[in-house]
Image (tube, rainbow, N blue to C red; front, side, top):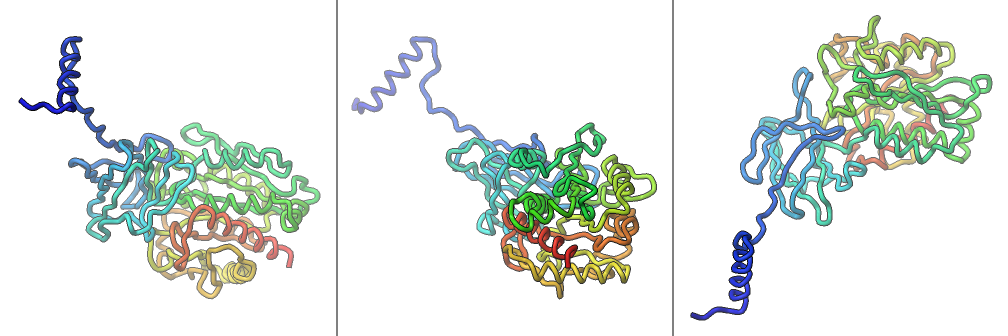
Length: 411
């Protein structure tokens, strides 16, 4: 019998294990990939699994109808691809899914190269844990959670022009952050600018833009100094704090979502507290901007735009500010005033969309009727007229908005 040295050593090792009471020698079995959403912001429902193909669906929870938010974690051997399949719907945007290899802190678009199938009957893409990583997170867009805000606050904690407090407690007992930036002296400040984001919990790009706006207010340059000398910004980063952290998508929540809660008896503590604060500042508010993200893809959803008001006077203010933003824009995301306002009565911006309740910008228009502007902006998740939307690009848009507001208030 001809035994090679390798076979002899293998046989000897097995015999030694048997002599010691161990199992016969065998190669270690590969660890199968696993998928879950058990972390802040996570959202997915595993419909089925066949080998390395996972069929998933967004966890809609209390959503009326379908929406596209998903955010899951893949763990397993590096460089072992799995197939992610969504049946009967397509939650993948024009730049493919977003992927994070550092626990959701930073993200990158995979573009369409990772997409295997896309269409109304379903979609799929290839996912993998990168070499050197323990896990990878995949989402319909880059996420922005309390951890991101805490990182930004830590970077600016020594700045005396920034104040952090608590607006209220959410339904689940979470602290809801309230930020004040710019002039801290009401006697010197010429007025107050209100900023809000995440009335719909999944609309993460709005948070990166809000962060960029506040950074501009705090920066040691000529516009920043003007902000700090003359104007105060009050910002609500997470209007639906529970939804952001729980991984709810938040749009069309039953019986209505946070952006249809500006009524006589609000359901949500964040909205009730913000309305109370607004009433106390009624004579001082000069500008109010609610930051959103639109639908996943198509038509108006792939451009930065404002939501047009049905009121003629408000529509004229929107037009004037849109022209200012086009004039001062320096960041990579394009904006054109000529088609940067979705008129009332066009596409989804109809009375039917507001039957569930009054929106933030409608409340602001009623409450701050003398303000230079009260409105809402839609910031695409992935693509703005062919330009990639990412965290840095959204921050740059926020800086452009800060510059435009400053110039709009100081003509």
